[in-house]
Length: 398
Image (cartoon, rainbow, N blue to C red; front, side, top):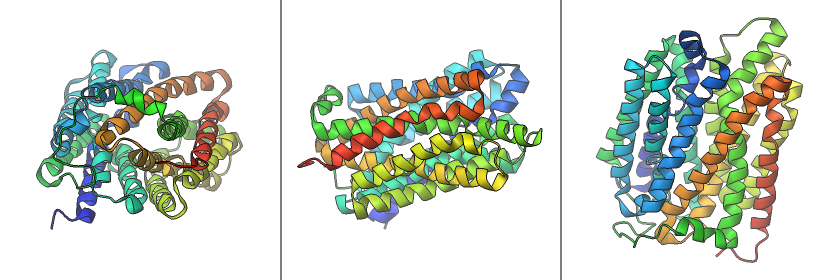
């Protein structure tokens, strides 16, 4: 029963939801940490940026060692999720300042590099190409929901910040248990074989036009995605204060609605569209819509609440709808022996870009105000859309 493709894909998605809860666990409680630790907005950026940098370091290490292709993926996922949970749990129990927080968040990112890219390979291993778009859409939807989960924990539970992070750590530990006990690799990528070490494949794939274009599309997507997820609550808080003169306690729930609920819906629609209309058309459509939201964001800054919710839902769905499309496309054009390496390398470079925009958005906000800050993100979807349009006009993607 557990070896059925649909059940395995559901289990892999559940592991992602639970394990990725630790990713934004500190970011979701930044207002409380700033007040408790008396740190500036600039300093608090590192609570998110350190995770991104750790993820990049972990992904590069995994790529060089070909871990995703040479280790049993469910065991790699379980071990990585356990270590990420441990780092977050230690943070929740003992940390009282940035000096200890940053190394633990960095290590959390390192270990998450053994969860997310490996989960993509596991998902693809249970999905034939004709259904792989929707399968990856479900998997990325799980990533999205997991990333947004701390906002829901904090918004509904009225927990102190240590409680939010401790709960997230418990979720990740549960994800590790599910991975080791129930998840297994499927038949699509020659499971049970261990290819020869080939760390240079991470660079070699860029010599081929199809992987190069898919990766460029993904990089444009990532320029926008995590900066939006990180700073959307700050944008909403500033807009609410400008409109009403006070803070709004519903911001956490609105952030969960936009990032989590709308994001999951966008992933499912994007995955379905990738199978129904093709990978390039689905990706270009999502990139154009999210890019338009970047450009329109100043108009919604002090708009009525209903309009702000509409922007959040549309943007939250569009900004992540194409993520699974890039993973699907790369899994189809990369060397089948090194699909895990290709996906890990793709995410390593993409997440390195997120550090840049996560840092730059608050700098721009300080200079010109939050109303205009998200305009910085618009070039990403533009570049990504052009790359995927070129990918769709190739004579052959084989």
